[in-house]
Length: 344
Ligand code: C2O
Image (cartoon, rainbow, N blue to C red; front, side):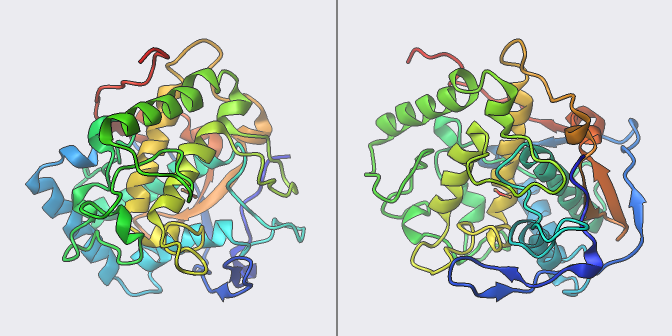
């Protein structure tokens, strides 16, 4: 059977990690409605690479985030509630309906569609706050040589896109600002050219040579009642997605906030930009060869989640409605992809 959405009335404190401290990230709850695809007449929202956006866009994006941050904390559209969605779905605030098994949307085939919907609603809330139906989030183009740093728009301490709880040495201007897509704590910094070669190899392995089958790319099946297994991650979820979370977070903190822990990751505006590129990779993967298609198993297609939309409706969304970004009126700017071939 497909994974069911949580019973929001039974939300309980989330566990931050091994230290055992808890966080309260429970949302308000209300009647649910079923998700409907947006009208095909809605304008396309084209997500652009964060290092390529212009001043007018930055102003608009900053304004939208400021307005979202200014909403009262109990408004389901507020930045706090939006960030807490991630905490609740990842750190054990919900049990799967009728069980004591925690609901966890990482480490399995649930990962890509859950995060696609998450961005979809986050973006529409921002667009509605500035009354712009074309508003689209930027994506962090970490798979290109020009995107190998935290995008500048997130690194200005005066901007609402800034988050002070990050690894300072990895900020632009810090001691090791270049993105290392398979970063680990012991990794040494490389000169830009070598870092790019290494990143390129990582992308080739995770997207092309190591992801020839669905389960390799998406991760292991997870059905109703299953406990997510930390080894069930697909290639891209593990690396670079996971490594980048840890690379941005502040590892001097017990719980590696913000980006380095699932409970706090979405408090950093950079989270949604990172996930823009992750989502883009799902679309790209499907263009890279035969058999690179979505699952057809109803236990995947009918798995569902709950999100609040821009009108404060609690919406039940099934994976089957998320498969085609065009139908969600979402699109990505075309930028060069330099990692498709194995040869350097
Ligand atoms: Cu839900 Cu980047 O993780």
